[in-house]
Image 1 (cartoon, helix red, strand yellow):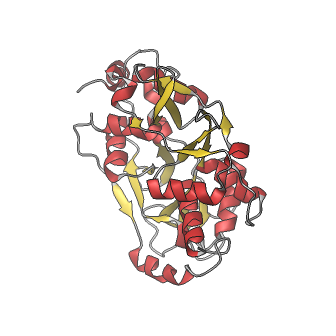
Image 2 (cartoon, one colour):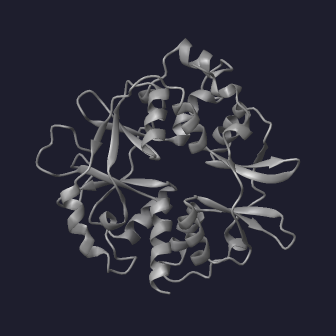
Length: 320
């Protein structure tokens, strides 16, 4: 089993950078991100120099500020200036430490000072997944019969459409005892961005994203300098790295309500629960256990920033 930390950034990164000009609109950026299946674009100045990054999170904040109305969005006004970068010849370990310490999902990759690509947490997780030799245990929750019913909601205005019509259906769940490498393999093989952690009794107790997978490989998690040392010294499992609080929303809520909740909590996704009514966190258990059979509080999908960007792009395409 090879160590991913012996690799260089250039072996794992995505080559090439998709760029826009400072005056690119929300409509333009959403279409570019959706068409190219990326979560960010770089912003060029008049000299073709990259001066910032616009991500799906920036789009999310704009939607909330404009209360669902058309936004006077310009990339130059909304971008994160002076984006952090690493060098193509840096050790992957250095890049992981940067992502972990800065709490960011991606960095620019430069060669001799010139941007040549993007390295994201997902790229690294895909590489970690390749090192797993096990066949991971997993569960899958999806209500295909229910999904057919939501097709009638597609004609509604974007802000009024139901969460269930916009989400990515299906929720992958794993036991809390499987290893980090096995977890990375599932995320990589299934091409998903987050996964729910369950106990032996089936109770959902946490969620793991690409950023969580990086924890054991970053300086802040362990004293040993290599992933081989960390993962052999003590078997790090899903329960060790998960984020304990699952942020969720009922399936019948509107797209606008979901956007506001995500922006207010500064999160990238919400677990969507199929429920017969409003869940009162003080009285009801918002997260199901495997023993629930009455069709309430069942996980049916995730609504992510990428889903929101895709929805805006589709709306703009239909309005052309």
